[in-house]
Length: 148
Image 1: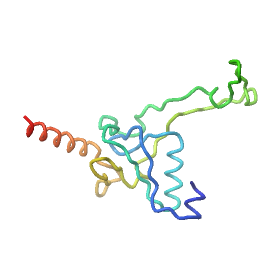
Image 2: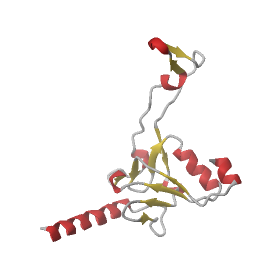
Image 3: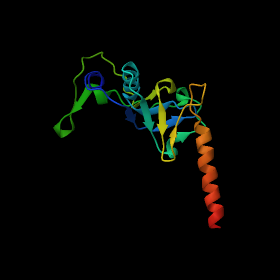
Image 4: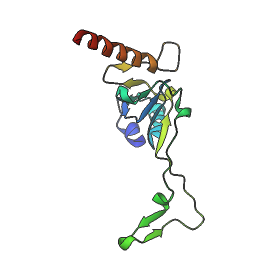
C-alpha cells in the first residue's frame, strides 16, 4: 500500500470497520491502523466505510474497545497432514497475535455510512457518532408513525 501511494498516487483510501466508537476511532482487521498512518504520511484522505449498525455511541473511544487476541500458535506453528502440529518459530520466540487494531480519529477524514458521509465536528478532532445515530432513530420513528 505504501509503495502504491508513493508511486501511483491514490485519491483516497477506504477501509471497512467492525466497530466505530462515539468519537470516530475505528476498529478493523489488523493492519488498518498502519494503513491509516501510511495514508496520512502520503497526504491521502483515509475514510472508514461502515453501516450504522457498527457505530457504537456507548463506547467513548478506541481505547474502550476490547481487542481479540488470537492464539500465538497461529503464527508460530503449522498444521501438517495427519493432525500433527509443527513449530516453525525458534523455541523461546513468543508471538502477539491481535485480530484487530484501531485507527484513531485523528487519521480519519470521514466515516461513510448508508445515511451519509459523517464529517468531523467543526473545531474538534472527533465525529458526532451519537448524533448520527439519533438522526437515524428519529427517522425510523417518523416512518413508523406514518405507517401506523
